[in-house]
Length: 304
Image 1 (tube, helix red, strand yellow):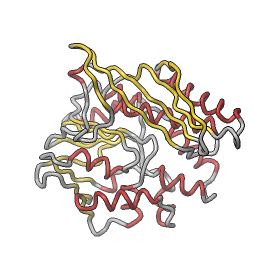
Image 2 (image 1 turned 120 degrees about the horizontal axis):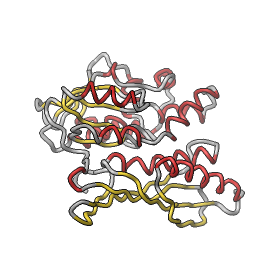
Image 3 (image 1 turned 45 degrees about the horizontal axis):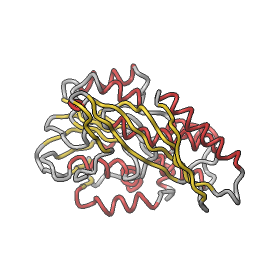
Image 4 (image 1 turned 135 degrees about the vertical axis):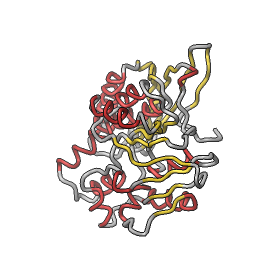
């Protein structure tokens, strides 16, 4: 709890621990099937970020029976089941309530060996930071709501959010990862701040190496930035210094709240190129090194 880790872990035996997490939210896309896929991928992500394998899940549903057809709910659940099948986790049931606002998500249980748990803190000086998905889903979804995105852009961000972090997590097991988290609602810099807060680690991020969704920077320059980005920046600004050349739109994307974002992990410098190559071979095409860890200013993040 003290380090805001992605999930809870309960040790069962010398070689087995349970990872438990829960997440649900209101629709962020119009298509109910795609909403189910995205919500499920987002809920499963915390297990992958902790180094585990999802095993079981239970649906969480709030549904407005009086104003929405049950066919919508069936499509949402079908989307969720599709992603659960991809993760090889088993749906055990769930719980539903009637509510004025639609919400959907999952509680998820995963397995991990107690010696292989990945926490969000533990970065070591000399580590390189690797990010597996591009940033910008918050800005892009705001642009979708404004009717400014093309069908191809909508499809691209939908598939990005519905893509599991399973393949990236599988690659991680072959490398000496020091710490890991997934980038979601607090934004890239917000989750990175959790990784270094109260630790001896400091981080230097090279801004032009951070992958962005195509079109996200242009939409951010138009002011299509969700309110969560401003709250994230306000909360973490004392820890972050940005070089003068960083454009406001790029700054906003670095704090942009993500939905079902990628994994952010630390890896020793010598292994980092092999890690990125292995991620690419596994189909995680956006994975790249975006910064390095030092002990110069503990608890601080420098963006250059």
